[in-house]
Structures are given as structure tokens and as C-alpha cells.
Image (cartoon, rainbow, N blue to C red; front, top):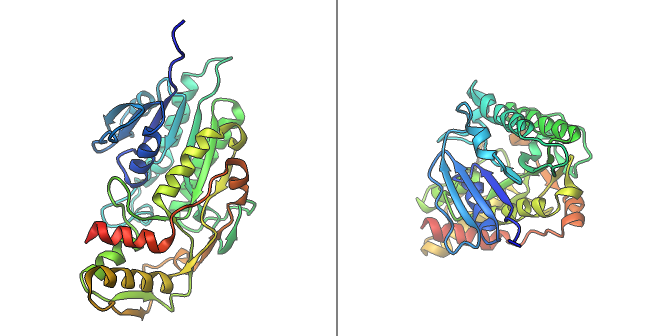
Length: 324
């Protein structure tokens, strides 16, 4: 008797910042791994998985269906970004909805078309955002959702499509709501305030705080985020049908973060730390910029056993070393 086929996991957005970290995490497992991205996905070195790569535009007709065909699990990490911004792209670009919501709709319809009674529904893990709650302070997943940005509303709309498809029995959907993801990854270094301020400090430029810098941020290292995605695949039956906030639960203020970046760069370069200065927020600032979030991921931890591993200081030192 031939051994059973290894499960097929399709990672959508595998060429991106989080996607490349998830690909590296899953490549260590005995899987069939289909890495799909709009840029070339480099297969992780020394992979235990058999790896197939596809360079496609997932919004093109039929491409989402081909990407998830026959998959036992789908990891949906695609989000609309630009070269200059991440979530803010949705505020300015009318086409963002086509990616942030439309792709989830395409994935659901593709899985509906391949659904067969009696077959185990595939798992779909979606990278959501804690910003979907739309409030400051502690977040544990029990809060009502009142998103205040276009991006957060689009993430919530995609998540609701996933939840409805789970209730219909088409798939087993898990939404992982992530805070600010940062740090050195195996692929592109992404975007965001941590990366931007590290570049500025390395260039010897002052780091500018909006207001007093007292807003708290829960920062999750990209490798810890990738392990959380993998944990969703391992515990899909227990997690399916709802959203799960994931973070460290150990926030830092923006002022503390910028000071830590300046010190890490100084330790690497031998120069004095660049100054950290307070400035008035620009007119482009949103409500989200003034709201701090602390993620209580105890529910997710109790189901999966997942824990964040990377301390902030070590993560900053690794990032500075990579960029320097």
C-alpha cells in the first residue's frame, strides 16, 4: 500500500514580508507547499517540504481558483499595499477593495466550486488585524468591531466572508488578528514605522515622534507571527469559525520604541544615539495613530500552546545588523 499523500498547503502572498516568513516556517514540515505571490517566491533552503512556486496576479480571472485547487489548507496573507505605505494605501486607492475583500470572495467561491460532500473541508487561515476592533486599550477578541479606517473595514468584510463560508460548511476558517508585525525576516523587510525609523537612525537623522509618543503599541516579531499562522493549521478544528487576536501582551510606548531603536543603532555604529524629537502630528494622521492597543492572546495560547519568543531588544539588534 502506498503512503498517504502529504497535505497540500497553498500560501497566498508568499513573496511578501510575512509570507516569506510563513513559507520558511512551513517549509520545515513534510508538506506539499504551493507558494503563490506577485513576485518570484524563492523556495526556502533545505526544505523538508516539496515546494512549488507560482508568480501570478491573484486578482486576474481564474488565478485564485488555480492557486487553491485541491489544497488541504490555504493561508491568505495578501493585502493591498504601495511602495510608500502599508495599511494607508487603502485610504487613498479605490482599487484596494478588489484585493483586500475581492480576493477572499474569489477564494471562497473557488472552494465552493471544488466542495464535495463527505470530503473534509479545507482550512483557510486569514491574516486579519487588531485594528478591526477600532478601539484603544486591551483587546482579547470579545469586543464589538467598530473599525475606523478603510483598511480595517475591508479586513473585517473579508473576515466575515470567511466566517460565513465556515458556517456553510465549505471550509474551516480561522482569522488571526495581528498587531504591528516587525523585525528581520527571511525575505523582503516590509514596511512600517520600525523599519522606517531604523533607516533614519542609520542615516544619522533625528527620529520624530507625533505628539508626546505616549501611545502604546503591541509589537509582534515576524517569526512569532509566522509560528502563530502555523499553529492555526495545527489546531484548525478548535479555532475555526472565529477570530483570534495574537500579540505579546507586553506593549511599549512609541517614545520607548524610538529610543530603543536609536540606542541599538548607536551600539552598532559607535556613534551617539540620534535625537528623538516630538512634533505635531501631520494632517494625514488618523484616529488609529492616536490609539494604543494591548493584545490579550491568552485564549489563542490556551488552545495552541503558542508563545512569542523574540524579545524587542534582540529583534531590534538583528534588524539593525541586517540593514547596516
